[in-house]
Amino acid sequence: MNMKKHLIALDLDGTLLTDDKIISEKTKQIIMKAKQEGHLVVIATGRPHHASIEYYDQLELDTPMVNFNGALIHHPKDRKWEVLHSPLPNRTAKKIIQTCYELGVDNIMAEVSDDIYLDRYDQEIIDIFFPKTSELKITIGSIKNELTDDPTSLLIYPKDEHIDDLRQHLDDNHASVIEHRKWGTPWKVIEIVRKGMNKAVGLQRIASYYNIDQKHIIAFGDEDNDLEMIDYAGVGVAMNNAIPKLKDMADHVTKSNQEDGIGRFLNDYLHLKA
Image (cartoon, rainbow, N blue to C red):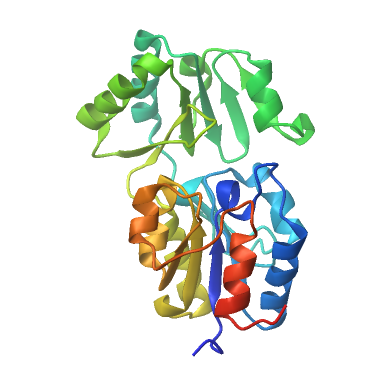
């Protein structure tokens, strides 16, 4: 059964990447072996393109990539591949930003594809999110004034005591147009994208492009932004370090991101003998 060509979808943080944000040598070798045997590997992440491309290159991929949890689906190597960009309406973004100002959140960041807007200067955020800032355009200053385009995503850095209020407000006032998620530790970030955007949307598009049956999709994840993708994939795999809800839903649970969970699973499931 496993001789069929599979589409293998990899989340990055907490899944493909170790806690040091690297791809372990063992997992990398097994992924390379899977590619040699004709399986397709794609990255499906909440990260923007600029924060994912180094891993795409390390795995020598030549496939489309899902960024911003599905709000941007594009092919880094093939300009002719039709980009699907589904940003938030600017008007909605501005209303949410106003609410954040009223609550007094620590900071707000908006991304328009690879252009970045940061409400307040914060060296720590810049160092963590944009270590290679040279190629990026970062605009710092009142987001409410500076942001004129429709943003691909909004990231809100709330104070601890505001997280629940803010999420409740988003549900009460904007549920029909946005999705919001809380990032896993160590981040206290609420990420907002357009309604209906999730990694499964991206996977569906890529699978149909390559004509791969849903039952031959293997997806790996660990957080709540992986729920739809793990549910959609014929073979949904949760990492051992995943949130309980994802483990309950997954078809399989593999070892953690620190123990080559992806490599071990692919080796066994696809009989790679790597």
